[in-house]
Structure formats: C-alpha cells, structure tokens
Amino acid sequence: MDMDVESNPYAAPTCTQRDVDAATGRARDAERIRREHFRQEATVQAIAIFYFYFSGVQGLVAAVGLMAAVLAAEGPRVEVALVPFALLLLVVAGLPFVIGRGLQTLQRWAAVAVACMCCIAILPLAAAIVLNPAQAIGPMLGVAANGYFLYSVSCKKAREIFSAEYREVVRQTPHARYRVAIVMSVPLAMVVGVVVLTVAAAFLVP
Image 1 (cartoon, rainbow, N blue to C red):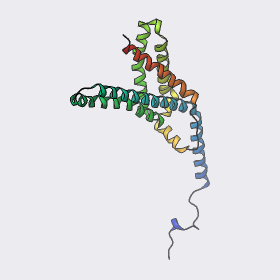
Image 2 (image 1 turned 45 degrees about the horizontal axis):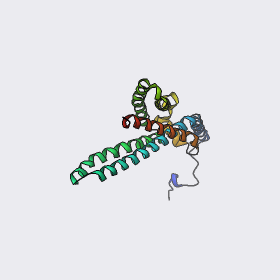
Image 3 (image 1 turned 90 degrees about the vertical axis):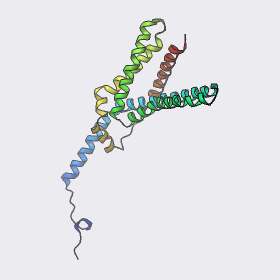
Image 4 (image 1 turned 60 degrees about the vertical axis):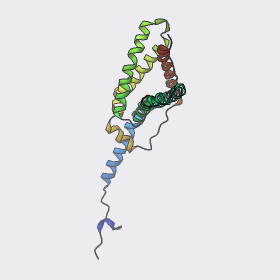
C-alpha cells in the first residue's frame, strides 16, 4: 500500500535550515520595526482613548438633551418631530467612537478623519483668540491640543504605522505589548473638557 508523503511521519522534512533562518530573520525585523514605533503607537492609542471619552460625553449630552426636549414637548406631533433630531444626536455621538476604533486598529481613514476634524476645530478657536484675547486661555489650549493631534496622525512615523505593511508587522508580533500610560490619556481628557466647555460657552453665553 502506497503511503502519502504528506501524511508520512517518517518522511524527510521539506523545510531547510535556510528557510528557518529566513523566517527567524523576518520575525526579528518585524519585532525591531514594532519596537521602533512603540511611542508613536502609544500616542495614537491615547488619542483613540480621547475619542472614546468624547463619544461618551457627547452621548450623555445628547441623551439628556433629548429627554429634556421630550419632557418639554406638548402633544404627540412634537414628540414625533424629535425622532430625526434624536437620530442626528446618535450619529454625532457615535462618530467619535467609530474614529477612535479606527485609530485603535491603525486604519488610515481614521487618521485622515482626525486630521480633517483638527483643521476644522482650529479655525474657530483661532478666531476666538483673535476676537477676545482677554479670554484666550481656553481656545489656546484647544489649538494646542488639536495641533498636537494633527501632528501625531500626520508625521512621518504616523504615516508608517497607518500603512498596511505596518499592520502586517503588528499581526506578526502579537507578543510585543505596551501600555498606554494613564498620564497620557488623563491630560488629553482634561484638554477635551476645556475645549468642550469653551465652545459651549461661546454659543450659550450671550
């Protein structure tokens, strides 16, 4: 009876030492590349945490605002008219979460989205600094935070980690782990709070 070579445990190995050395070299190169970009990865992950925070805050504000509108509404027609408004609030609250998830998985579209949002946010903040220099601390912090985010997703190393090749490096190095320091995420959350309060005050205070 003929025995299939592939299922024969006594068959000679088809993998040579050269193949083993080549695979080992590729694994070492992947780990080296990953470790060279750890700091940039940690920065991007911290920004992702910020977007998760921002999404939660927006969702809470949207829920409170919707509940207040429903309680203040008179009649079923007004309540039905609130449905598109509720859907809009849901989209606005969910967008930062989607972007944060994209940053976590190093998707290039998420980096582009962050860059666009930062550029849009910087314009009114810069205008607020020019128009009201006496109360420019909040807008200046907002400009600084958005400028930092913009740099973090568009610098040379950021372009490298948002590439398909680097995502393959991440897939090949699951053992290489790092921690996003709380000292990085907490200041980002504080800056977000300042920016949100500043923008809200600009619209709510007469």
